[in-house]
Length: 205
Image (cartoon, rainbow, N blue to C red; front, top):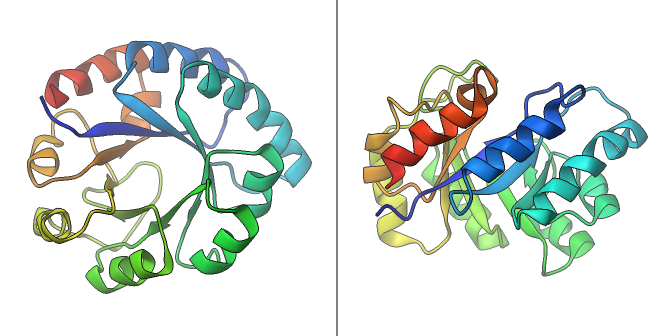
């Protein structure tokens, strides 16, 4: 049994029936999908909080960590479980000061050992490497290889997340290399979410 788990990232549009889809995905992936990242762009903070509220409730009911992308202030306002910071989204130490010890802080580290070590030293709870494959969700010129995951899991206790274009078909080498989480978005929300979760589950067993 692999220790690797799923870290779901929302599509940019979380309106309509998305809350229902999230609930179905988390039900199908119980014990496997253990974190959900709320990622919307170009929405004012009040609207973002309104969109997040029902999704946060679903995550709480399913005991899934609710992580806010980019915004320390929104994470604080929602009393979320964590915040994910890109390289341009602020300093881990400052975020920690504002959010306290309990909140998870994750950092995008692209394909860089150096950025990951810096994030770890600053107190990050996890580091994210990617994009491993061309992504439908977010274009990236960074292309780490599995060796980076092997290096990281061999030396550090801080969990690593593999991100970028990950599908049930291409994920086995990442799991084998020691990724603690697979961050997935389009592979789940681009089709039938339950079928996708079950396909990932088959590879993670």
